[in-house]
Image (cartoon, rainbow, N blue to C red; front, side):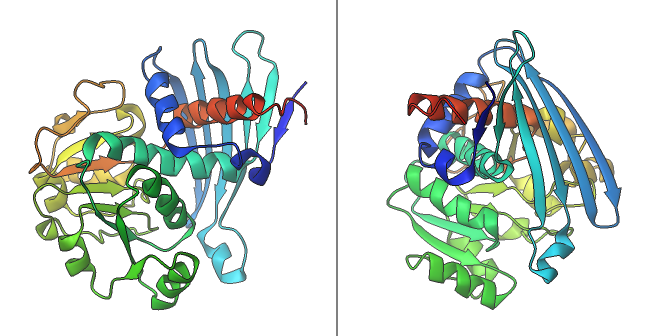
Length: 308
């Protein structure tokens, strides 16, 4: 029987730290076979991501990204996630796209931060007050419960709306000052041009870059990548696919070999000392959708929700 997991009912059984533990375990097994297909029409994107991990099964995620929908009061992102058995190919579950995306995206960044950010980090800056920003507040709060959060957004109205949902969050009027005073900077924008200036970064900070997903998009400038130790979730789905790395590699500002490690190199995926600036590029990837979907299904079944 195929299980249908909707958003609210599925999320009720999830835990951010447990998800990052599941991601860690998933990367100790066989490396994923992944394939991405991108189709573009103007600013709009059709993204198909597929993954197959021996012993874990298969996942296919189809996403449409239409940034202009926001002006019409519509969701900018739609899609579906199908989870298949690796034993017989049966469709085991259909998961709410937004549930998987929320937990995969923020969980990916949290997993990296648990290894790369200083454990004593107390000041967390969220850049971008959109849907992902809200998820990041939830995720980072789980691992850094004593942290003070600050939000910066291009639109002051967006920042105010974010604060209305999270009264504990302070609003930053100046991005440069906010970056300089943060321990962790997590960036989730739809920017095509850098919003983070590397000269603003301070020793010991952790910079988490999420928003760029196309070859023509980036959120940090060359100087930021040059000053930081660079980490990615997967070399296969970031270095040759996303402008955050493609553009500075093509210009010679950095080299592909400057990427220190990805999740499949757990011994190297950690900060060296308290003064190191770490930079993580969250590229997503279907293998993370697969691991997250498996975690969601396991939590669903563990709560006794085995039917539709």
